[in-house]
Length: 264
Length: 264
DNA sequence: TAGATTGTTAATCGATTAACAATC
DNA sequence: TAGATTGTTAATCGATTAACAATC
Image (tube, rainbow over all chains, first blue to last red; front, side):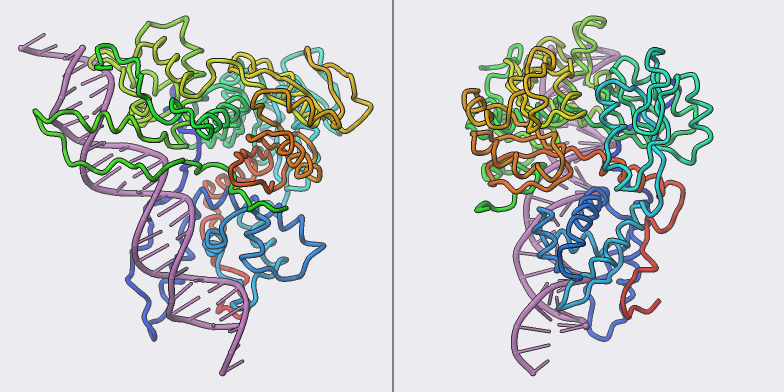
């Protein structure tokens, strides 16, 4: 209501202010001042997204592989360019070993540290339909640093039902329960029509990060982070790319635009 | 196996080749040649993603609003910058009316046309756990141009079970059933360990677009489009942004890097 | 040392945005 | 006409990538 529309995450780099001035080329003998300063840079959003992937992949290969992996090897299993991977890792500080590679245990620890998943983070889910149940029951959550702390639904019939070890509570309890948690992430898995209302409730209870599965644009204050997952949008993007692949010109060009009065 | 690793979508602009040469500033009297050429440009991936949002929002407001909307008004309800919205729409051809705005019905039709959602597109879902059920039962799919054409699971106990109007089939039927559909999109909602195998089956059956919900990196030929939704990654990104907001320096800088031999 | 691989630079590309001429 | 709003430009910013000096 009283808050500016929030552009759904993606570009939330803080303090672009303190950017590193291009300090010219390093010369032999020159102290590595720049290296120090580069460490102070903010981590780009795109990099943060990939760090989560690296962390998961490293967990997958920690057992069955060597202690050390090269950027090339890790990039291959992560499906990214190795230059990009090295650049991403350079934001964490440099602890690869030239001529050798990265120590997997160190690397894992450092990424987890930067992402803040060294201890478990609370998650509350609102809306326990099919999707909410799926999210609440997702075993991977605990493995990746999260704990389902509470579940809420507006439907009284669902009250008390247990999903895993957590039982479903009434929306009316949201404020109190969420208020007692430490910086929980709110997950909205309600129908679109309820999404804004639920978001307002979460904000009022002190939540500052929201993951929104409802196909609705949320209006929140600009210091609140919102990320959105929209199944149909993903499918539509695939649909578009498919058409473009198959050479459908309408997908790439716009000849027959419905321009009123335009020269067709 | 024999295919190069595929970088998960995002940057699949075709024919960057035919880019429009910067043709200087338009001058009065100069014919609008450039306008014609600009129409031939490929639509940026970022724009395609937002078009899906615009389409949904327009559907939401088609009834209760005026026939025409300004870029400012639409941008507000879509949660984006109005300059960005105008730029996005300019890729569809110009059919806004200066001084007035965009005709909502025209705009909706044109976006749907470009996205290729004018007729229903088939979707097949593999893996009918909680998530698969949620996706299969998602009512919004039909409204946004998709049809759940088939469901597959490896668990024989689920065989024949119906989700909506569609019954679950054995994986062994996948090739035949999918082969009989027209360019279906494959959705992977299996555990991570099964994801690559399922992807291979889908590819063998002729699928060229995949939406992957399993937390696993898929290796596919580079002419195949893969998009990925990873719940835990989204949460980890929010987690990181939260830490950065609260001034945790480790989230923005990397001072105490575990650099072996580094001067701490 | 020779070979290998990192960390960084710089070129390039793509995306965002303010500003404004065109024009309804 | 005057006011309003589009469509486009150009500046800027962010992301990607090849290349290579540094160095293990």
